[in-house]
Image (cartoon, rainbow, N blue to C red; front, top):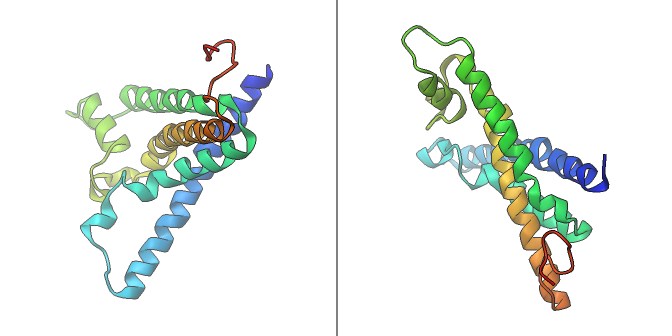
Length: 168
């Protein structure tokens, strides 16, 4: 295993499970604060793909890669999308209720519009498949932003001097 693949695995572990755990902790904290203030459950708190879900990936990607400056972190989106593709394939080929198309099953299990749509799965597929993929994409964006910000400080571009990615 090359050094780049090892770095990609390390950054994928940070991007997918760690950022999802941070999102869960942040979501619980936000709900507790909202209930303590007296706001209670609102429609805005039921947003599945809102900032409280993907901000940990963006923040971790920026902060970790600002310190490590690994170009491999910019490509964490690829394992994340492979993970999502595997989840879609497993949902499409698995058991589904009579009369339900595979596309409906995938949409309900992996991409529900609100918590009430999850039904029997209790949204575990969202937590185990969709959120890690989403956070891997935002981690990659944060990692690119970290490289750009470091390059601006040094007066160079984010991929300068790299034989595959750079032009100079």
